Length: 562
Image (cartoon, rainbow, N blue to C red):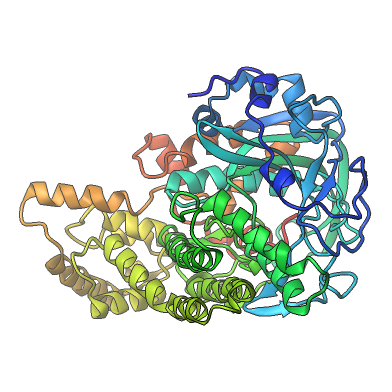
C-alpha cells in the first residue's frame, strides 16, 4: 500500500501513458493556452492548461477512495493539493506536468450519428468542453487518470464557459462513491472544491415550479470535482476516429484509430487480452469483453434503480463503467418509463436502458470494423458478437431479477404479475425489494412501500396477498436457518439506502450557504447502502418520497445539469 502524505509523493507515481504514447493535435499551442472553440482535425488529444477557479475552498473528499489509494486525509485540505485540483497547475514540478489534456469524441444518439451539435457541423469541435485531465499514474499497481470536471474552456467548449456549478458537482461527487458502494462499476470521486467568489449564470427552475423547461437564469458558485478512472476513453472517441478512417479524412486516420484501440486495450483490458496477439484477434476479443462489461453494467443499474438519463455513445465509457453523472436519477415510485432528464426521452428511460446499451454497443462494433476490413473471418465474428448482445443482456437480466426476488429459478408468470402489481399499486422500488428481503409473513411490511391510497383498496390487497403466497412457495425457506440465509443474500442484492434526488437538493443548497454538513452526512449513509443503520438514519433516509415533492422541477426532473 502506498503512503502518500504530500503532493510530491503522488508525483513520484506519475506516468502519462496517453500523452506519451498517443498523438497530440499537431495544431495545438506549445504552452497549453488553447481555450477558444476551434476545429481539431487529427491527434488523440489536445494539450491544454486548466483554468483555476478563484479563491477555492475545500468542501469534501472521498475518505474511502483516499484510503484505497494510500492518500492521507489531511492532504485534501493542503495548499498545493487544493491548487492542483482546483485547476491551478502553474506551481507543479516534474514529474508532474503543468499542461493537462482534453479529448475529442463523436456524438451518436441511440445508434444514429450526429454532426449538427458540433458548431462547425463537421464533428471536429465536439469533445471534452470542460473536462481536463491533469494526472495519470500507477498507484498500488493500478493505473488511474484524474480529471477536473469544470476545469475551464478547451477547444471543444463550443463557446461555453467551461465551468461546472456547485449543484451538479455535489451530485456527481456523492453519486460516484455511492455507486461504488452499491457494487456498480463507476468512475470515482477524489475531491470537491468550490470558489468562494466566482459565479456563473445558469438556466434553472423557479422554487416549487412544475415546469419541464428552465424558467430563470440564476447565479451559482463554480466548483471543480475531480473524477478518477482507469481511463476516460469513451465509445464516442472510437466513433470519431472510425469516422475519420472510413472517410480517409487525413493520411494518418486509420493509424490513429488503430493506436487508440490498442491504447484502450492496454488501459482497460490488459488483464484479459494478450498483448502478443495479432491486431484482428485483439479487436474481436475487445468487443467480446466490452459486451460482457456493458451488459453487466446496465443490469446493475436496473438492480439498484439507477437511470443514466442521457446514455449517448459519448457518455458510455469504453471500459464498461458508469461515466458522466449529468441528468441521472435514482427511481422512487416504480415506473418502467422513468426518465429524470427533461431533454431525454423514452429511449433512455429506466427499463429501456438495455436497448440503449445495445445501440451504443453497435456503434462500438461499427467503430472497430475498419480494422477488420481485410480479415473476413474476424469481421464475421465481430458481427456475431454484436448481434448476440440482446441475448446476453436478457440472460443477465433474468439472473438479476431472480436474485432480487430470492428465487432459485426464474418464474416468468410470477415476475410479470409482480411488475403489473407494482405499477398498479404505485410502489416505491427500493423500499419494496428491501422489505421483501425480510421474507415477510404477510403484506404489512411490503405495504410500507405503497404510495397513495392503495393500502385501502381491498382488491389490490387481495392481489398482493395472493402474489406473496405464490412467491413464498417458490423460495427455499424450509428452516429458520434457510430463511435467515436467504434474507441475508437478498439484502446484499437489494440496497436499503439510495441517493434520491430529494436528499441531494438540501445538501447542495446548504453547501451554497457554506454548510457542508449534509454532504458529509450523505457520504456516511450512502457509502454503506446495504447495512442496517441507526433508527435516526432510517427515519430520515429510508422512506417514501413526500407527496408534495412529486413533479417538482429540480427534484422529480432536471434539465441538463451543468
